Image 1 (cartoon, one colour):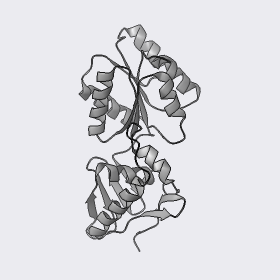
Image 2 (cartoon, helix red, strand yellow):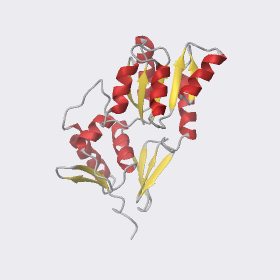
Image 3 (cartoon, one colour):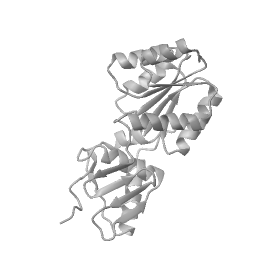
Image 4 (spheres, one colour):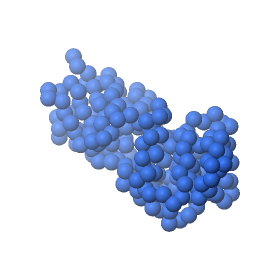
Length: 234
């Protein structure tokens, strides 16, 4: 899951980002509403949830929510604010926020609210994702080849898991390497150009060590494709 975090308080922004990264989220953190809108307009990144502070420089969180909804964008939004009066909550929700968290808060509650958004929104990740011969387990960070005997449960690193998840969410589509690079590495640490190819080599070697073929194909000059028909039961 890729999260857009919009928070101008540096210490709080750093703390939230670290907690989210520890939970295996990819996080883009910006400090004002105008930067946030630029991120949302980018062709390179697809966000699955936004965490937006109300009081922001440039473009307020409230105005940002309204702009997002005016584009009929269903992106789930969790609004953060020190404004905790009922009338403020009503204003924030009416502007398009899906949930509202008053500062100060504990990080455990922030994570719980993200999980609640996940349960309510069909656009966010399920507990498992099955495409063709493979099932991805979000809780245990594993990929399973369902038709081996016994089924192979292969542990994945965070980045391997993110690559599998994104390609499985777009089965049989060719995804350019540049799209994967910008989608799965955060904007604060721009990756080197061959990082996707290097990760793919490591991923294929890992699957081979477990006696399992890799359903991700390299389409020369175009990108990568999760082939949903490979390794199916004969």
